[in-house]
Length: 277
Image (cartoon, rainbow, N blue to C red; front, side, top):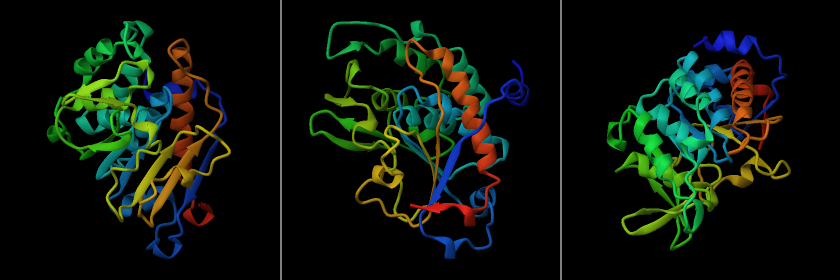
């Protein structure tokens, strides 16, 4: 398969991104660019939910891996949980890209009567086939996945146990998939109540947050949990993505390269020029 640089050169799209920070300018400690800020101390990578947004998240991860900017922790919801967990479990960014680019609707399309169109068994089989490990405890990077408790209608953060079940639950879009049952309780998409995927971030952590827009008019910080407490957050949001879905998977690679190129450019940006939330 061609290298990422060869593939990227075949695209001539304009990268469009926005970087915003919390008000921590006085704490920069000498960092001038986003790349330097990420390299100077441990940070958490958070990937938001977003319908079939895993192509864009994978592009971000590829750019970070190329610069050897590995996080100390990964958190995420839905599409962010899928890509974040794959990276945390040991897949390289290149392998994640290969798996996504080969994805076809038949790989997860299993209609079956129930509380949703798709049963989800094919998705489970797909996860079991490419994940390097099925256990949170064996991940190379600590991982937190947000899922929605279908009984109490609240977010639950999963950090241990069976990895494929947690990923599948976090990606279970209501009415598209049947709920995932864990310990006799139904669970849905983690983005239902935690679009940002930030619920698993410990208080005070430095965070790079990749935000997939669901409402362009809603400010990024409005997606943050009410009790979220971190003074050092940089949010990377992008626009001009193509629509992707079960019947538009061919647009996925376009979004991957847009996110990859935008992240490479964002890493060069000076923190002093970023807007505050």
